Length: 219
Image 1 (tube, rainbow, N blue to C red):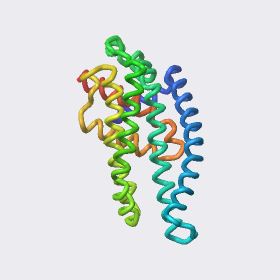
Image 2: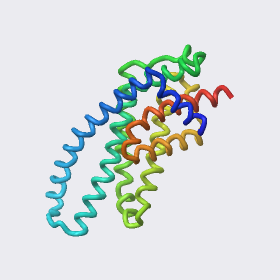
Image 3: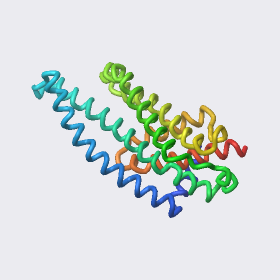
């Protein structure tokens, strides 16, 4: 895992990966800005529907919880959606540099297949987190319980997403072992919760997935 992380940082020096990084960051920021405005208006509508108009402790806590969870989840959805768009460019660049033998057998999925997998990924993230929302709210009063639950659930989902990107290109040979998938998901999800760092994590995590998969199958 450490070696894969170090190699993924090296990949940023590759011009092709750097260009993709810029595209992902710019598109993510633009999408988040537009989505953030929509979230603010949606929150006002929700408060009106719940008849929450005071500025007391409970309404403040509810606002902070909703904005915090929605913001993190929104970033997670947007970042992975953007990464799916450019996943094959990242994978190709890393494989050409480090794993030319594997690159020769890789098959880029069609645009339609990529869009379909991205939609499934977004549906999984939104669906599972909505199902877990009551748990998040109950654990809110523990201080750290909500963050831990969110981290674990989304680590599993992100690990699956990153594996799917390689499977779509290499079939069964793109799969990674369960421990690597979970650890990669934890790294990516935790990184996405850190401001500024989160902008670069999706590309780094995708590069890490490439190194993990090919190192496992080469061992």
